[in-house]
Length: 335
Image (cartoon, rainbow, N blue to C red; front, top):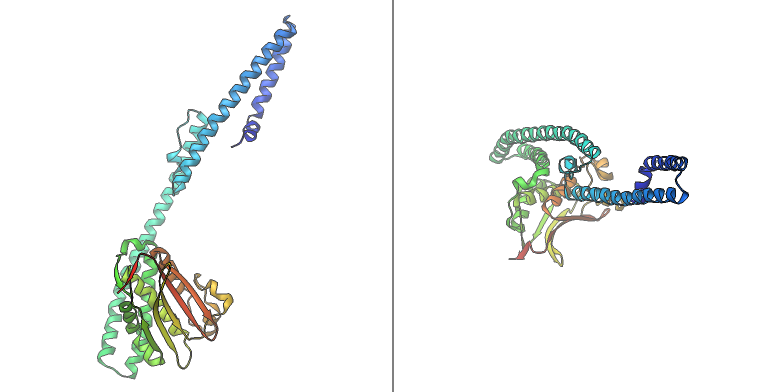
């Protein structure tokens, strides 16, 4: 609030004062007051009005400054009505009460939305745990009765399991902190675990895997394994027809340690690279091959943001793609 806006707001009041001053001057003249007496009375009135204006302006400015400070300090700004500073002005108290009533409605709707979200997440988690049982049974049966048919079944079963895991982690992605355990994690072990989980894809598609991860990091093993699996699935999906290879390795940098998944697949167009982490973005390759949902890398980027891990990509069409996870300094050490 500045002085000009304050004066414009009080314009009607000042016009009323001006009218009263003119009427008083006419009255004093009619009653025989001298010109000097009339001028002195009007000057006194004007000075009192000026003093009141300055005091009222600074008082209102302090009030709104306190309100702006409160607003800047709270994350949930719909709570402003509950935290507004007290004012002895009736107008301010009425505004505060109206804001509080409006905010109560917003808060009730937020609570209802949160309850619906929690119910939906609980349903998804329950559904995932129920469907995991038959998926595991199918995997065991295929492992115990190996043949070309069971290998194909196991491969498709693995796809279903990956989609189910993606659904579960997406449902939990907004509240990672509730299921997050920081521990010393050996990246080589995590990479080997993820590669083993996708062994049928590597064998049937003739893809070679190379792991060189001498670094340990302090992070959540489960979430990193999921992120790495999503990246690896993308590399397998968009592999080259012959001589396909995927390298998983770490590099130490000034800002931390970088875990990279590099392939020699079909690559990504340069103009599409900035968008690959966007939700539902499938890109040219996804539309041509019809095998993309646009959720895998989006979910990886979202989870990395929650875990404090940087994520980036480099790619050249028909040459290959490299996805990089950067763990900040202080979270890793050499074995």
